[in-house]
Image (cartoon, rainbow, N blue to C red; front, side):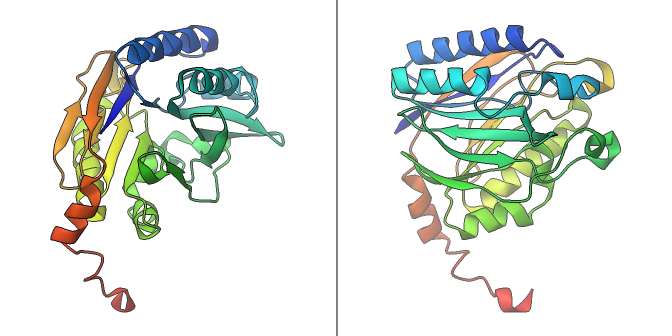
Length: 259
């Protein structure tokens, strides 16, 4: 059993230090409740302040990830950083980092699928590699927000024996039904735990939906956020995955030569 903490944040656009301090306070609250693994949302230091993203981006060894590494090391916890705008080689990537209990960055993933409707490609450079890693809960993978609509990516991670999928996001309320359905579908079809962190910032059509989720491989929702800023805590038995895959051997019954 592992105690998971998901940070569902109300992000202030472009206010990096304020957002960083808020996240640290929420992590501290999770530590006080015995959380051992943390997931933060997408672009939580800046929000989608795309017109300023070049100025707001930071390097992989910048203050945000360094601070999360320090917390992981001092408290012996694992942290999925959510994503931040990462400055690299003159470009900006939407990048998430996985930090182990010794404070080491053991994996990083840059969002592959950018939203054409938002002209993200004018500001953000897409990643070009999927990402899996080993944690105390077993092998896991990560995708970011819009990636969830592209079934091939989470399926490829499942075929690499990832039994948990992390999804940091900023998903809008206007497509809230899609958010819940897609999270549930990815969990059920890939027989994975799905742990997702959404935000609640914005207003009008730009308002984010919240409803961060922790789902088991059978498609049962173990915890779900509301539409306000909150810390979602759940105790998760990650050993269930092997039993569920044995009870319903979907991967054994695949016939990929026909598709």
